[in-house]
Length: 560
Ligand code: AMP
Image (tube, rainbow, N blue to C red; front, side, top):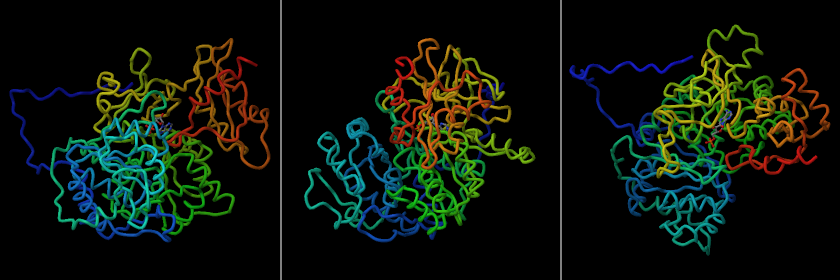
């Protein structure tokens, strides 16, 4: 078992000898300033959002910083003050990156909003955050037209394009043009200096239950997270990389890549709105992408496209997969068929988001491939800056034996201490943040998520791991996607039900699939039934919505 080790503070009678180092607040503007000055020529390539403009947009870190300064001037001109929130509804692209730096760098708070949420929920979030300006990509004009009447606090809406793409008529009040805002200023602007604990960015949790809650990141937390996430054990981002974040900038800051890539000097490639397999593949090849990051559902599309067309990647070498569990079959395909190293990552909005990443220790290199794979499939090892522990129902810490499963708690300088505007009250437990995940930790410190606490299946008082069952099902060659939920059962309270999307081709049957589980799990883990579906409900952040499945299928066993 790991224990909290706090060394006693030095005696208060002896004044500490202070270090003699320059004191500089950690600030987001320092990242873009450094990037422009020291890696000024590094490229940022973006797929355009405007459907009628051919080709990719290209410029350098240096250009980006200048435009961010001009935009910061425009924000000041519009009356945006320190701490005020500026919303964005935008894809991964260069203008969104400029906003990342202009808004936070000028002392305001960048509020990235997930456009895949329901319009009512978006309006609720905009009002709760009290966004003063709302920037949006052309794609989202109809969405903004729908929510604008319900967002009276927004002083102006800014379409992130040029004059030629402004609508001739629109119901959106105070509609401004992004390029005109930027063009109105020279960029003779000095990034202001302020407390590193000042708020920098705001992101709301996916909110599958109740209203979404805001995680309010600081400059300090963001910079520390960016430093740590670039480390070799984590994302290993370097100046020789070409990085394509598929993970959206509208959710958990694209896992911090808009910051960590720039401080590393790597080339950045933004995919815009086109995230289907072919569009991604073409961009990977055309721009020589070496490293990417995204949720499993995105990789499903890319892998499927590449396999169907007999394609291989010429430069793509590494990817981080997280947001939900990376199915082992997906990891095997990427490593064995495509030679792409897979880093399994775990984290959450409340953690900026990175908490753990997968990998091997030096002594694991001697292990056979299967044993190595089992380690890589875990959600991974804590990153320096994040501490974690697992506890039982009474809050007692559980051993790191790789078997005992308990509630996963975390702490660290880029983990929330509470939600924006104190929603949900005091969320910490003795200084630790309860993640809502259930996990094991092995003696080497590798953590494995077994379930989300609200998704746990309890059958006759015994726990059944839904992620394990899904991973096995997705290892069957006829299965594209699988989700396992607990549904009502007259005798056992709950039993596992497996929902499966088949792959095209030979159709796997219920009996074949259940047979595939034989010998791989304890008998009582065997799903009671398999339901084949056309698609699984996917939420705004690319995760399967198990709450929806439970609503639909909860009587599946009890009424039959
Ligand atoms: P979000 O705040 O939307 O990023 O969701 C965070 C939640 O996603 C976590 O608490 C986990 O339940 C889940 N999650 C994230 N990464 C993983 C992963 N690699 N494996 C399993 N679950 C994950």
